[in-house]
Image (cartoon, rainbow, N blue to C red; front, side, top):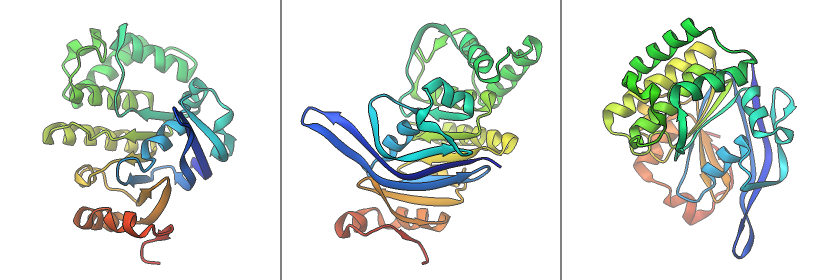
Length: 259
């Protein structure tokens, strides 16, 4: 069993007015095969957590720690984090002109595994996974995300996840911009990837609709850079009914639902 542990994490970002603290002491432990949903209003620090785990240079960790099976993630470069088993599905996937999807995927797989996958098996795996995600085979020869719709970009993110088989996947608003059919297809891909590898999932979302397809073991409510409440799937249903106003209005300290 693998463990991703975040302890008292404080993260800042530089602005025109100076350094601004976004995360203000986040503590969270994710184990293999667990799904953790991070919910909260805009600006609460959800995406900052995702990009801090991945190593985005925009975000500065001022204190606290992130460890993967006891190893210091914060001392790793971005590519070392990927090879260690961390994966980020971005909220806004970027275009990579001049690099085809097939070349990108095989290069990434080679970098992570330390050796190139056997071509015949690899091509079959790519085709089968694309079919399950309802991606046209022609996408393999298109440049990464260039001219892709929002839904196509999100399917490509999950294609990467299924093929690269990370220990932990951080999904930053993967449901954003997806219609009902695409949401179901993408969610099924996440579930397949988790079942195949026992990956831990950190699922960041505003809404509960994706949680109808991906059932969380734990739900954490982010407010103003902190975890304001934690609970099970029933907490997501409560948020759907009541919204976040009570957290913002009361500034409640972190609690555990049912405690």
